[in-house]
Image (cartoon, rainbow, N blue to C red):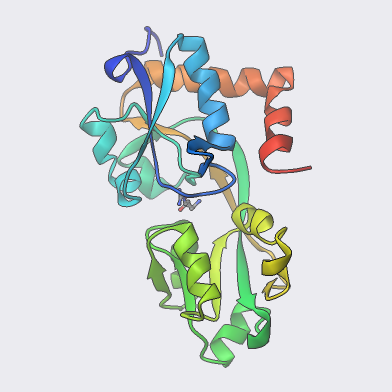
Length: 233
Ligand code: ARG
């Protein structure tokens, strides 16, 4: 992989899908988070600014916004999968994740078996690995448009339980108003997922710059610092 990466209109333009805390979300009118901070390191190395565009989640599977040149890369807490690799190229992994089952306390649900036994309503974000996992277990989850919508669906009683990436729930449950009413399943859903950033197929120059930033941040302590800042100890 070689060459200097060429970026869109002088800015490192990142496609994302908001909100997905703690990876990307709005705070005081600015998009911040773990992914944003990591991609800022890439931008710094390239001596450009990062510009973030909120795009439909479906885009990450097809790579449409990367292929059209509207975005240089996608950063959306996205799991590296073989299916997605058909349409985009992924960086080296930058985060390990699992799925979580989250249910209302009053439903008494603590496992996917309970969801089945109670014929309860299950939700997930459309197009995500959480949705695929639920389907692989024989469920037909109600599809929500964003991770926020999934959690709101649970809050407003549209569904009794949801399957969603664990790091998202981890932060959400720190809020007592949430932990009073909602509870994690008793068994972790170890899907062994790894998040990666993606670029247009064949954009090896930018991919090399992203990989290098991740590797360097891991070696010099920056990664751990950002991890603690955004994900927690
Ligand atoms: N890790 C999951 C996936 O790749 C969920 C990602 C959701 N990202 C988002 N920005 N809403 O399918």
